[in-house]
Image (cartoon, rainbow, N blue to C red; front, side, top):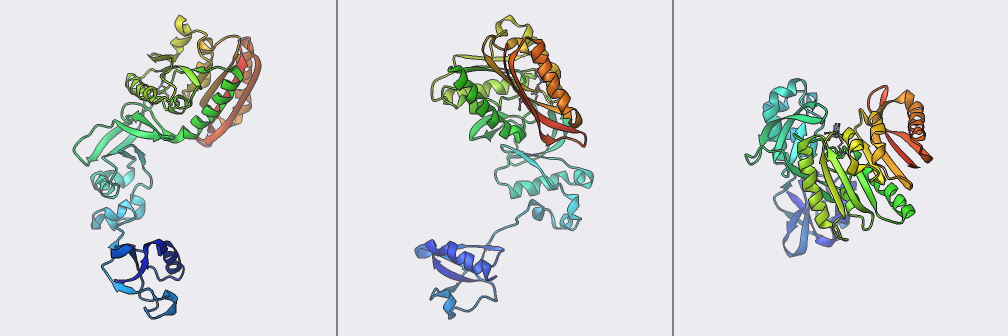
Length: 364
Ligand SMILES: C[S@@+](CC[C@H](N)C(=O)[O-])C[C@H]1O[C@@H](n2cnc3c(N)ncnc32)[C@H](O)[C@@H]1O
C-alpha cells in the first residue's frame, strides 16, 4: 500500500491534511518506519509523489497496518453477522475485568458467540457474564458466566473510582458507578462542614455496600477522623473491610482514629448505645426506603453541633415538594434547629418516578 513518509514529529499535521483532503485510508493505521519516520496510508486518489503538495516527502510501498474491527459484533462468526443488527445487545457494563451484558430476545441463544467476540475485541476483559436482573434487598445481580478468558470464573475484581481502587463483586454485592458524581458532591459538602466545625469529621454510612463513598474522603488530608460503615449483606461487608484496610494504608496523614464496620440492619444502629450521638455526617443510600428509614437513624447524629445528612431515594416526581416538607417536619419534630433541606431530581427512573438526592443540615 502506498504511504507518505514523514518525520515522526510532523505525523499529526500530515494526517490532518490527508484526512481533510480525503486522501487517508481510514481502515489502516500509521506505520512506524526506520530512522524516526512514519508512513501515512494514502488512497488511490491522492496525488502522486511529484505533486508539490507533498513538499518533497517520499511515497513508499509498505504493507498496510490493519486497524482490526472497531466493534465487537464484527468479530462474530460470519453467519451470525448476517442477522439484523438489532439482534445484538447495544450496551454492556464493565466492572474491572468483568463484563456484564443483558441478553434479550434472540441474543440469549447466542450467548457464547457474543462472549467470544467480546473477549476477542476487549483485551482487558477476563470474564463475560449474562445479567439476569437484580435480586432481593441486597440489590445483587443474578449473573451467569458466558465465557472466561483464562478459565477462572470468579467475579471479584477491582474498579477505579476517582482514581482510587475499590474491590467489587457484582455477583455478591451491590456496586454502581452511576453515583460517582454524587460522591464528589459529598466531598464538597463535607469540606464545608469541616471548615465550619474546625475539626475532622466522623462519617456514618449504614448502607455502605462495598464502600464507594469513602475513598475520596479517606484521601482528603484532615477531612475525617472516623468512619462507621455497614451493610446488611455479609459479602458486601467483607469487601468493605478489605477496601477500608487498603484506603487506610494509602492515607497521607496516617490511619483514622476510629473505624467500625458493622454487618447489621441499619435500623439497629439507632438502638446501639455505642453509636448514639457519634456521627457528624450520615449517608443514606437505600433508594427504595431511604426516607422511611431516616427517622430510625437520627439518634446516631452528634448533638449540639451542626450535622449533615446526604441521601438518595427513588420518589414520585409530582410529590417532591411534599417530600421536602416531610423532611423539614421530621427534623423539626426531633427538636432540630437551623434546618436547611434541599431535595432535587438527579435523574429519571420511570415515567412517574425519579432518582433524587437530598441534603439536610441542622443542629440537634
Ligand atoms: C443501593 S445500595 C448502596 C450501596 C453503596 N452505598 C453504594 O453507593 O454503592 C444499598 C445497600 O444497602 C444494603 N441494605 C439493604 N437493606 C439494608 C438494611 N436494612 N440495613 C443495612 N443495609 C441494607 C444492601 O445490601 C446494599 O448494599
